[in-house]
Image (cartoon, rainbow, N blue to C red; front, side, top):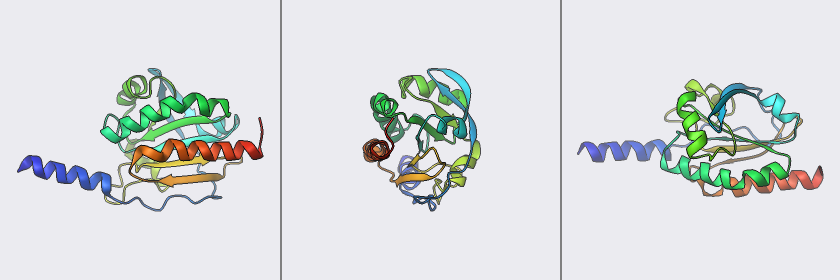
Length: 179
C-alpha cells in the first residue's frame, strides 16, 4: 500500500501543470547561479552567456530521475550542434550543486553545464515551476536571444521533444542572424 501511495505521489508530481511560462518576446530575467560542467563548479551569469549568442535554458524537475536523465542525455548528444550555431546550453534545477556536479559528469556527459536553483527562485521568475510543487522546476525550455528577449518557449513534462524544438528555434534564429 505504501508503494502504491508513493507511485501515485510521484505520478502527480510529474503530471502537475506548470505555472504560466514567459511568452515569446518577453524580456528574460537576468540570473546568476552556481553551475557545474564536467565536475567543475563555476558561477554562471545569463548576461555573460548572451554576449556570445543565444542561450538555450532548460529547466528540469530533479537530477537522476528517469525523465531528467533521458533529457540530459539528449541535450548532451546535441551539445555540439548548439555550439556550432553559437548557442550556449544550460540546464537549471532546484537541486544542490554537489549533486549537480555528479549529474554534470554522468548524465550531461560533461558536454554542458547544469546550475543549482535552491528553492526554485530562478524557475519562479521564468514561470517554470510546478503548480502543485512550486519548489520544483517544471520541464520548460527557453531560447533567449542576445537582446535578452525570449525567442522560443516549450513546456511539456515529456522530455522527448525539448532538444528538437529548441534546436529548430536556434536554427531559425541563425538563419536570420548568421554567424
